[in-house]
Length: 602
Image (cartoon, rainbow, N blue to C red; front, side, top):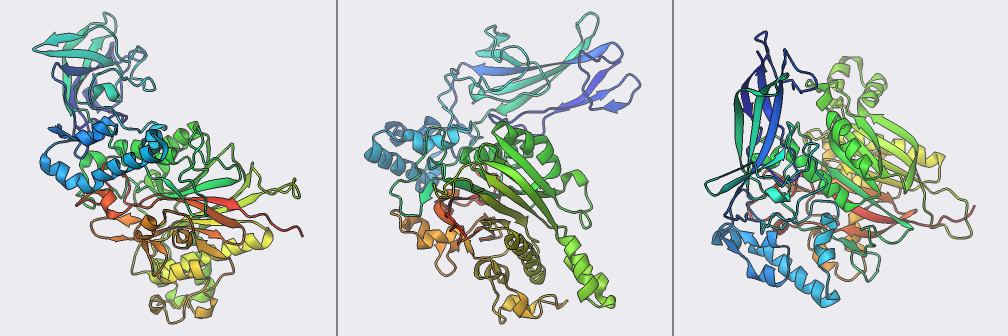
């Protein structure tokens, strides 16, 4: 007979918006084990599994700490209450917690005061940008009045009026009857109970005792302070948004570049400082999606997107938000694991803003094969390939804008845009490989530029710090022959050094913070390196902090209107690094708003 051997949850800390999927091990009638579901529609030997989820609601209300959401709150900041800051951000688990978080926490007070002074009622702009996409601040007063109607946990109403059971000051509400369950705001502070039982298909009666699991108390999804768009072109409005959160100027477009940290690399060994529940993929994927959707970018360039996560999650989820997707998986000549978990580059664009014209795929492995055939001696070919073949790729997409700022004198001219998305090799000792990959990509882009008068964007994780040879090649179009990085060239693939050039007028978008003329840029300039005009960091772990990610643009055809504000180390809170419960990658997202410059008629 069918029986349940074991039931457990991958994580015992449930989080609002993150689906819970129990592991259920069954014994079949033939004594073999399986984890396959046995639904009522397909019984096995006359039996099926019935699932139920309950919320155990105590008569005593519980608030959770805004800094350590797995801990109960013991104090509340009355300044937050007075300033009408979302109540969930006002709770702390101890005086030390409040003291340690004060430098970050007081920013909320300052912003609230500033918003009231400027506009009288600006809470929506400060806290509403992420809220509008579903990741917003949750009311932690636990009144149980704000259930989420967008979540489905079975075909019946989420919270039926009937009380399942009441005992010892606790009320058990049935909240779902499928194998999986997604906690909602009503569950915050409460324990959930999962029940699984074998049922006779004919009598519909349980057979044997149910197997149950109790979770920890449900916690709200941590919500970082939203990052604002900062104008750099001289406009006097900060983050000027229209009703749906989009930048209101129809002649501009926004581009996001973000290394989202592949689940394959997100190990507890590498990121031991991040709570295990915040490092789990079910949590991170929802948090990343909320963040990405909240930026409302017209073009999204993601790196480290696993192929299975693209197909099963990002492609369908971003499709719901109006994005079309293109993907290039890394090659797998070096990678020896499951091919479904190989990561790659994914580029998304809004269907209402752009249409797809053409796609180019760059496989650096193929370029390495070609290079070694013509430039490396036969005796060195194997060693050369071992050094050059690293599976990295680039995805180049040509788009056509569905908007125009060409003016009346060019009413019919197509506005094309070329967007390159890449992830360059990570190994720091292979400086020659990094330079060669960047140079190979740029030469490919030069060929596209020669065939069409087209603005270009080059986005990605280049695994190269400002001032490195790779960065110099991108930003200045050449590399100083005396640059120390060029000393690492065992295959002589970078010689003569005079060939390390390109003719694309590329400029780093975030350097506009250093050159901008808008008011209010001083804070952003403090987060920039004055020697390189790049952010102080885009990657922040316990072992490394520095800039590896960039958005470059062709300065003869595009201008930067605004940039997503940079984080500083205080924003990441004391003694923490990335990823964290608030930010689900070890990189930060970069976003720039551009305007196409009108092209002269020829």
